[in-house]
Length: 428
Image (cartoon, rainbow, N blue to C red):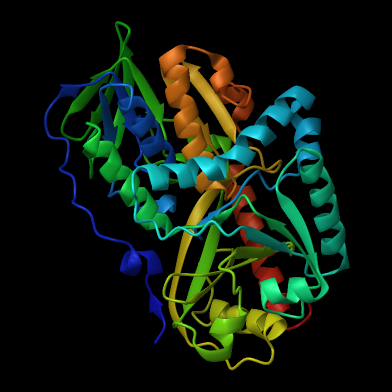
C-alpha cells in the first residue's frame, strides 16, 4: 500500500535528539540551519578548534537535506562553457573545478568519519531520452573531458546494460559521482559535529538577527546566541521574517516515489551497477536504487491541487516508457521536498554584512554544493581569504529575483502540464 512517507525516515539510522535552546549562550560562530551546508561548516570549523553553536528550527534532516534523491553529482545543471559565459572564464573555470571535486569531498567525509550513509561511488548516468538529448550528452562529454573530468559516453549494448533499458541508446556516465541515503548522511554529519565539540540545538527557530557593538545576536523564542560571525545555511527552508534571502531564489518542488524491493529480472537488470541516473527531459525523471533494492523515481513538481493518483499514473507511464516488458511495480512510499532555483542554474553566495555569510539556490545539487560550501565558508572564516569561495560574492540586492512567488507558481503549472502530457502519451 502506497504511504505518504519519506523512505529515508524508514531506512536511515537513528541518532540522539538535541535539546532546545533555552538560555543565552555564546560561541565564536553561530550557524543557522542543520543541513549539508551548516553541518559541513560546523565540522570544518570544529576540526580547527573553533567554538560553534548550530541552531535548527525543527530536527536535523527535516528540510531538503533529508528528502533529496541522494545523487552525489558533480557540477551544476549548467554546462561548463555556459558557466564561463555567465560568470566570465576565470570564475566559471574555478567553479567547475571546485564542483568537480565536490563528490570526493562528500565520500571522503563519509570514509574519514565512518558515517553509515549507505554510500555507493559507482558513478551516475545522464540518460538521453531522445535525439536532442543525445546531442546534449555529446556536448557535455566534450566540455567535461576537455577539462579532464572522468566521464564516459555509453552507447549501444553497453548503454542498455548500464541503464537496464533499450529505450536509452546514449548516456553520459560520470565516474566521479554516486549515491547516498541523504538523511543518513546528514544525521551522520550531525554526530560527527557533536563529537568534535559543536553544540546543536533543535526546535530553535530564529526570530531575529541583530548586530550590536560588533557582535551578532541570533535570537530564538527563548534565548539568544552571541557570536562573532553567523552563517545562514537555511536555503530553500528559510523560515520567518528576519531575513530577505528568500527573495534570492524561487521554490521548485520535487516528488519521489519508491517501489517495494525489486526481485528477479527487475532487480538483475535495472541500474545493475548501482549508479544513480536522470534523463534529459525538460521535466527530468530521476532513477536510483536503495540498499534494499527499491527503485526510486523522482521528478520536479509538487502535489498541491493534484489528485492523489496523479503521480502514481506518472510513475506507471515512466515505467512503461523505459521498462515496458517488466511487470507493473508495486509502489510503497511517496514524498515531496523543495529546493531553491535560479534561471541560470547558478547558486548565490552573499556576505550581506561584515561577519554574515550565506549561500542559496543550489538548484537541486545540494549534497555536493552544500557540503563544499560549508567547507568553503569555514576556510574563509579561518583564513580571511576570499579565494576560499569558488564563486564571486553578490550583494543581496544583486541576488534578489523579482516575483519569486509567481515564478514558482508558473513553473509548477508548466510541470503539471508536462507530466499530464507524459501520462497521456502526448510527450515522450
